[in-house]
Amino acid sequence: MPIRVLPAEVAAKIAAGEVVERPASVVKELVENSLDAGATEIKVEVRGGGKRLIRVADNGSGIPADEVELAFARHATSKISGVDDLTRIRTLGFRGEALASVAAVAQVTLLTRTAGEAMGTLLRLTDGHVTHREGQGAPVGTVITVQNLFATIPARLKFLRTDATERRHIDALVTRYAMAWPERRFTLLHDGRLTFQTVGSGRLHDALTKVYGLDVARQMIEVRSATDGQVGPESIAVEGYAGAPTLHRAGSDHITFFVNGRWVQDRMLTHALRQAYHTLLPAGRSPVAVIKVEIDPALVDVNVHPAKSEVKFRETDAVFRAVQRAVRRALIDQAPIPQVGGWAIPTQGGQWERRQALVGAGSEEARTAAQLAMEVQRTGPMVDAEGEPRLAFEPPRQLPPLRVLGQVAQMYIIAEGPEGLYLLDQHAAHERVLYERMSAQVTAAQVTSQTLLEPLTLELSPDLIAALEAHRDLLAGLGFQIEPFGGQTFLVRAVPAVLAQGGDLRQATINVLEEVIADRRPLEQEREERLIASVCKQAAVKAGQVLSHDEMRELVRQLEATAMPRTCPHGRPTMIHLSRIQLEREFRRR
Ligand code: ADP
Ligand code: MG
Image 1 (cartoon, rainbow, N blue to C red):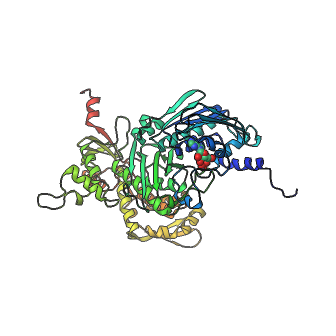
Image 2 (tube, rainbow, N blue to C red; image 1 turned 180 degrees about the vertical axis):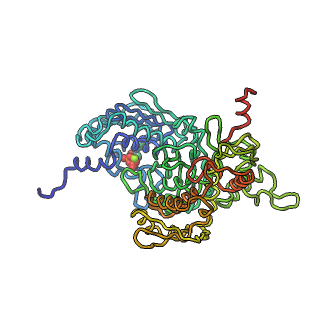
Image 3 (cartoon, helix red, strand yellow; image 1 turned 90 degrees about the vertical axis):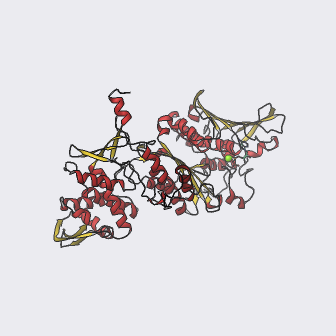
């Protein structure tokens, strides 16, 4: 075939494909337009999973009668006027493609009126061409109805899923936007039935409750970054809600990020969030979170993809750090101990938790001036009678003072605290203690290694040998000194000192090497953390080991001194709690 320019109509349909992939894409573009138009009420009506009908009605600015046709022209927009504006984008739209794309692949009806006009305008389009126009009475705002999506493009129609699936995509989208914009009121109807509605109170937590239900919303912890308030060119504000570590899901569907009010799917952001939960969640589980990132528009490029769901940051590292830190701080400051049957992980509200909230996570990073000021407000001056600083130099207390009572089943330490009974898993608690100690040593490149009097000989399988060779430096950094001795034999000359304190050293070393193979994560730092956790797992006291009273007291004291005493490095709880109130309830004293 000779080269020729495609007819405009075909070109339009091809281009539309990039913007409109499925019914949910139409909903997205229309809702974004309503938000840009300043609407406080946005009503989304869907029939047949959006294949039959999508209608978005808003009370926004409306489109002036003399611009309605132009709104459907490709690259026609009221939001930017030149290339320079691309660095200052505060609106969700700017490409001027959405209405043109939708009109190219469906039948569209527009009814709109601005506040300055006495009468509204009705416009009908088929295949991108206006087929009808008339003046009509209408409230201020815009109603766009999209019918028979892809009816004229069989290739696309074939790829649409069942109504139920398309509906799920629409639900995900509308609920996300309702959370990103809690001050706007969203209503969603499917086939005539109201399925979702927010109040538009402006509080994210209210919207979150509508999306996830009260039960989940209760377990969400508020996140607020320290840069809060200062609006400089470099400032990155992070706020939102992150689930307590006890709240986790199988997939990452419940991780939601907004950048300047735009729902984005970004691997770097998701990764930063996961890092914030590091060692707090069980392996393979994902947190629930809704996080808003506000950043100077000049530092983020939203013009990466026609659907605008991807962004590029100028300062990726800074954004990563801001998200990771804000979430980590919130989790450490506020995470309650998990619930197990009648036993619970100690929750907020106890005396010690209040103190802990005041003192904050001193070990993670220095407290901000604002936090210190708040402490002063709530606890009085920070100097004692002699004028010495009080709170500020006390170690942060993450646990209530515990008095060890004894051991149960050679596995658990039972202790009493101000709020009732605590049962600690001796292995998990010890793992946490060892893990934090060893992580600090690794960070400072000061791991204590123990040279063995008699080297240990190991016969290794080929995959273990490969792992050993690929990660020689990593293992050396942890205190392993392992040398080839011909064939598949290797000599272990030194091990991390924690490992040398008894137990089956051979098996422990092999277990650690196996962990190296099992780990397919690309980041060296994560692999290192996981290896440290694995060494500590091997080194920690096992279940079944009888502990003396002094040993238990010492373990509890050491656990108290850790930054995150409530979970082991693998995310399991180190302790559960039975409160006095629960005890009274069980014994029917209340
Ligand atoms: P973009 O949003 O990128 O500007 P669109 O094709 O989505 O492009 O919309 C084109 C123009 O139509 C917008 O710039 C805006 O002026 C107008 N418009 C679209 N939807 C609405 C609405 N719901 N309320 C008011 N104006 C709208
Ligand atoms: Mg738009």
